[in-house]
Structure formats: structure tokens, C-alpha cells
Length: 155
Image (cartoon, rainbow, N blue to C red):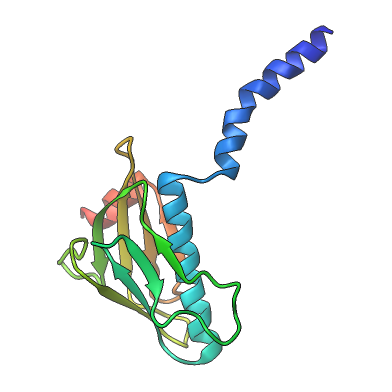
């Protein structure tokens, strides 16, 4: 009985962590959705052999693939919504300008598997900063932690 009670306590203590792992919310959901949309834009550009634009609308809080995804690849993420977090910075092609207040910004993915450089920085409720970076030579998104964001954006 004591062993069963101890197992019950340990299991009860782990439930919130498991819930958080399986149910993304806020910054985690936004980051995951944008990451998947970037990967889909890259895949579409490579497979179709045509450049694909990722359209970021900071004021509307949306990120989507221009023209949607076609050619029957319905498993691709078509768009993402920025919610539960605040977009703090958006830098394209290492420009000094911050596009986080722009109406619309385009990030191009090329058939060669490359893309424009992009860094998006988000701030959650607990003032932790997270970011997404697109590496220009592979066009793969990378999730950045607080220290990496500060090193890239505020250098």
C-alpha cells in the first residue's frame, strides 16, 4: 500500500508537466506553428522548383505561405497565428530596420534550399524572450533561447 501511495504521489506531481508537453500554448504554440510553416515553405520551394514567399503580417499577427499550398500536399502547414505572445523584433536579411510594426513583409524561399535571412523575436508573459532564426544556406528554422536572441538581435 505504501508503494502504491508513493507511485500515486509521483504520478500526480508529473501530470502538469505532461499536460504542458502535450498541450502547447502561448509562445510554444506560436513558435511551433511558425517553425512548421517555414519548413513547409522550404519544402514547397524545393519540390515545385519555384520560389515561395512566406508572408509575415506583424500587425495582423499572421504568417502564411503566399498563395497557399497547392499541388495536393495537404499535409503542409499553410499558416500560423501569433497569439499568446508579443512580436518584439523582426529582422530580414540582416537589415538594421526592425519590421515588427510593418503591414507586410516577405521572406523568400528558393528552389535551391536557401532563403532570405530572418530573425523573429517573441516575448511571453514571463518576460522570457524566444526567437526563430532562418539560416540562409539551409533555409531551416532554428528555435532560439533567451541568450541566443540577445546575442543575435542586440549585438
